[in-house]
Image 1 (cartoon, rainbow, N blue to C red):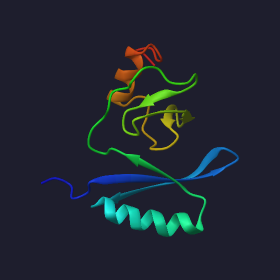
Image 2 (cartoon, rainbow, N blue to C red):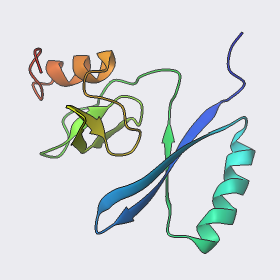
Image 3 (tube, rainbow, N blue to C red):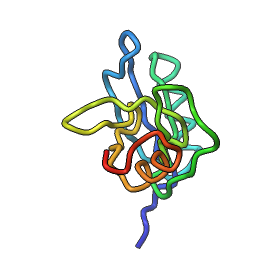
Image 4 (cartoon, one colour):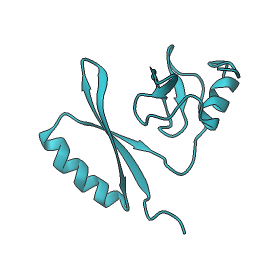
Length: 114
């Protein structure tokens, strides 16, 4: 039986350019997400990022220097070192994830043994 959730959104709070708080919320419909975003964005300085929790997407071209392709955010992101791994600053996926590693090795951004 599949998950009833259609959309995952990461809400991020930054301080001096660094992500200091991250919350992943899953929504059954885009309408629920839009209501949530409207209420919070009126009163906070939060960022909202859609994340595909069901399937990884391949990159299109190369991104800015110092970034890796995040197949779940479907964007070029900074990966921050944490607990021995590098993780996407938004969705927190590791650089050791199969798709993250596969796409970035193919682009020459990572070595296979990283």
